[in-house]
Image (cartoon, rainbow, N blue to C red; front, side):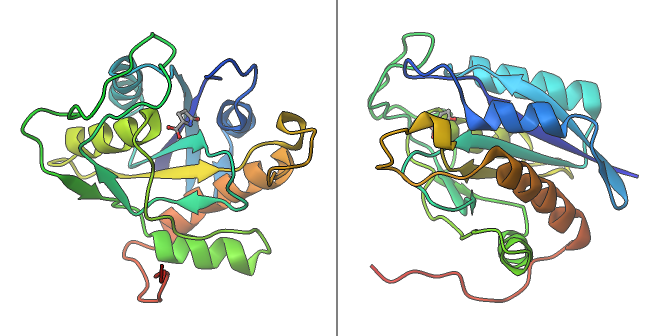
Length: 212
Ligand code: PCA
């Protein structure tokens, strides 16, 4: 029986809701084929976010960690390919921190690649009718901070990790100007991300490349 830790961020930037937190509330203790999901809530605060996730890893001893955050403007569930060693915050985080061009980890490598099978995940969700595509940037705010910091923490451990961005919920943009996804679809999408992770020890060689 494998264990998958899925983490969700609290609201930030003056918002009262974060779809990542709403989704992980529904995924707590969900069963997978060959595994189960455990969850934790994460503050949108530099370094405190890493502490919360590392504590949850130590408590739950998961086989895989899937960190999740919202990405306004995205229309699909987007597994991230790469984390970079930069904190460049356009807005202050929930602790009032606003670093500019500082490293996440001093003297860390420039970048880490995800260790989740993101191509297999993308194919699985698409086959189930859920919009999904690989993203090549997790930004430079707390989501990238967490993606990079947890990859660094797990670099010598046999625990897979990757970051997944999700769209806004419909109630977060009642003007209708931004793409949104229902909570029901997001929850099922993240459950499938976890299942595809268990089902694919190595990734599949299909393109998810982009041409600018
Ligand atoms: N999204 C932000 C931080 C928390 C969240 O849910 C980001 O993309 O960095």
